[in-house]
Every structure is written in C-alpha cells, then in structure tokens.
Amino acid sequence: GQAIQAIMQAYLSPEHISAIETGCPVSALGSEMPRQSPEVRRAATAHIKEMIDLIARQLPDWGQPQAHQQAMALLSALIGTTVIARAVDDPALSEALRAATMKQFTPAAD
Image (cartoon, rainbow, N blue to C red):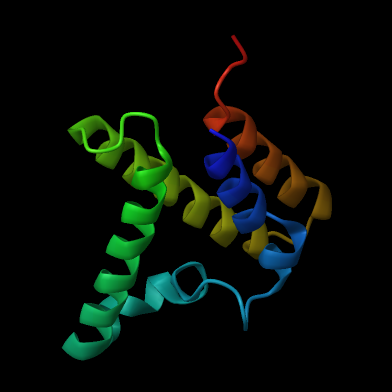
C-alpha cells in the first residue's frame, strides 16, 4: 500500500502537474498519440504497459487478474486527473481534482 501511495503522490504532485514539458509524456501527449506514426504508438503502448505492470506489482494481489485491472484503472485515473488538472485555469479546482483522486484510490484504514 505504501508504494502505491508514493506513486500516486508523485504522479499527482503539484510539481508533476506543472511539469508539462518534463513530466509523464502520456499525460502530456496522450490525446496526440492516435495521430502519430505506428512506431510512436508502439513506443507509447510499451510505456503504458510498463506503467501498468509497475503499479500491478505493488498491489497485494499481484499476479491475479484483478491486480492488472486495478492497475489499469488507477493509471487511467492518474493520467486523466493530470490532464484535467493541467487544463483548468482554477488552482483550487486543480487541487480538488488531485485530492479527489487520491481519496478515491487510497485504501481505507482498517
């Protein structure tokens, strides 16, 4: 759980949100990928699969199909949140989007 939290905190950090040029290329250029060459799309696909695998390996049920599905959902939420948080011109809304995603994907304390 701690590794997942660290991944989420880093990906949704204010520094990453503001680092469009140096941050994750998927969140910066994802909407442009369908218009790219097959080679670029293949590289993007490989990178996204690596990101999914990295997240899945941190989950308690790693190796099970549900871990892969959870990793895909979490990655999609992280990328989507980053795209939207960067798109808005309201810092409070950007922060609220980040906080909502963190809360949604943070396991409840037992």
